[in-house]
Image 1 (cartoon, rainbow, N blue to C red):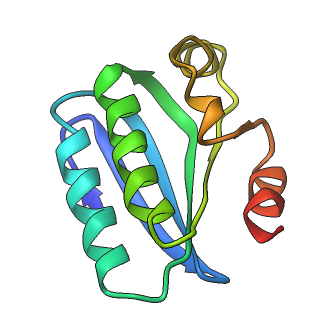
Image 2: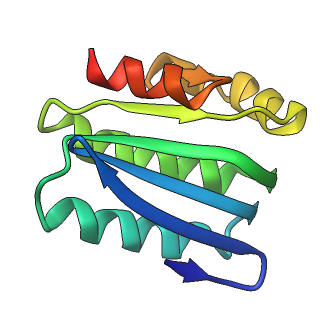
Amino acid sequence: MYGGDFLIITTRIKNATLIVKMTGELDHHSAGPIRETVDRIIMSGGVKNILFDMSSLSMMDSSGIGMVIGRYKLISADGGKVSIFAKTKTILKILKMSGIERIAPVYDAIEKAEEYLDA
């Protein structure tokens, strides 16, 4: 778990999926610690897929999109997948505008995001 000034990150592994829950603001200040945390967990083994839980984010900038793309490249190199759970209008709009759904599908229910990764 990492707690910055504006972002709290919690992680857990479920069925070889790393679930990364973010609460607060995902910006250029907080994207680095997420990258480091997720990369360290992936490199330690036992993770096939990543689910980014953005349901509690209040703000995200392009650094957040870049962080997801970088983790997608890392996990997909070994045949893994990435999905995103988001439900706030602001975050959904940013994700849609970025085109991230082409590589990491966005779902409005965490169960749907998990089902995609389990398929």
